[in-house]
Every structure is written in C-alpha cells, then in structure tokens.
Image 1 (cartoon, one colour):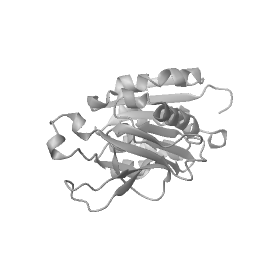
Image 2 (image 1 turned 135 degrees about the vertical axis):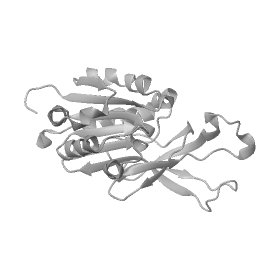
Image 3 (image 1 turned 180 degrees about the vertical axis):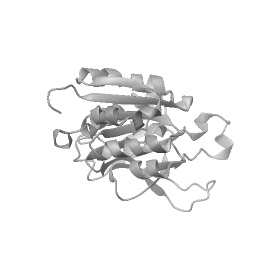
Image 4 (image 1 turned 90 degrees about the vertical axis):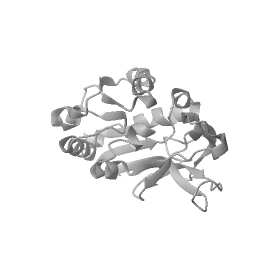
Length: 238
C-alpha cells in the first residue's frame, strides 16, 4: 500500500430497525484512531466504482435487506477478490440483498430466522425473539487473532439461524434448542462468527449485533474491531 493511509469505506442503510447510522457510528472512532481514512456512504453504487474500490482496503457494511444492482455486486466481488477486506455484523451483512445469489455466495452465510419464545410468552413485539443463548468458540476460534483469549459468553437477543457452506472458517457457534412449539426435532448449531477467504481478500462476519447494547457487549465489540483489522487489505494483497 506504499505510504498512503489505509482507507475504510463504511456503507450503511437498509432496514432502520438495526439503527445503521448509530451502529456504525460506534466504530468510527476505532477506525480513525487506528489511522484509517474513513469514507461513509449510504449508496451501494460505490461498489460499481472500480477506481474507488481499488483504493479501499476495508469495507464495513451495515445494510439489512435492501437491494443491490448486478454491476454493484459484481464490483464488490471483484474488489474483495483483489484484496479489499469485507466485514460487518448481524443483518447488516448476513441478511443483505436477499435476491442476489452472487452476494450470498460471497458472504457464505444467510440469515434464515431467529426463533421465538414459547407462544404464551409472545406479546407481538421484537422482544418475542430475544432469547438467552450462548456464543461458543470453536477450537480454531480459541487460537484465531480475532477471537483468541475470549471466553464463551451469553446474550439475550436475537439468535441467528444461518444457512451456510463449508468454505468458511467458523470461529464461534450458537446452538438452537428444539422446544416443542417449534417444528424441528433436534438442536441445530449455526455459525455465529466466521471468516472467509475470497481471492486475495478476507471476509469476517459476526451474527450478534441486533441492537446498540449488543454491539457494546465487550466480547461482541472486541470481535468486530479485531475483525476489521484482520480483514483489512494486507501488503501482500496490494
């Protein structure tokens, strides 16, 4: 990267329930203190700007649902393959652009659901899906730079059930029980934190992060911040 500053692009938008502006604002001071030159935008058209992507060393995306054009996702895939890092949390990366199979392949995991409380405990609000659950580190996760030194921890928030493939390196998992009010018949384990190599680029996904208080949990915040650093373009990918 020669002597220029490391450049980060923060793309935020989509469903407002995940507070994309406030959520990404939590991490801007970390990036700036780390020497990143930060650009913030709400327009996915930036992904189709090949020159801008070539200058970008890290993309932090927080865009739940929404849509993306074919040339934009093509540009994103090309940028990551060329060495641009790509990271995010919760629906901002694992539930983005549902209609784009090319995006889903890039990320390697897609939100399917977040199971609810038992029916008699549901009141019709978002808290119906706030379940106590554990984030459990894998053997790889206990050694990986993003998660080394962290202990398994509990959260009471949305627990993401993720459809995934085996190209990803899973650093942490979460297990969904099989209560009688749901139709599945045995516990199901989903990746909760994973990395993925794509060409010369690195991808990091953390599924916890539904609300600001979850993002401020010390372990969640540590994973996201370390993930930003790890995903950032390395000198060998310049």
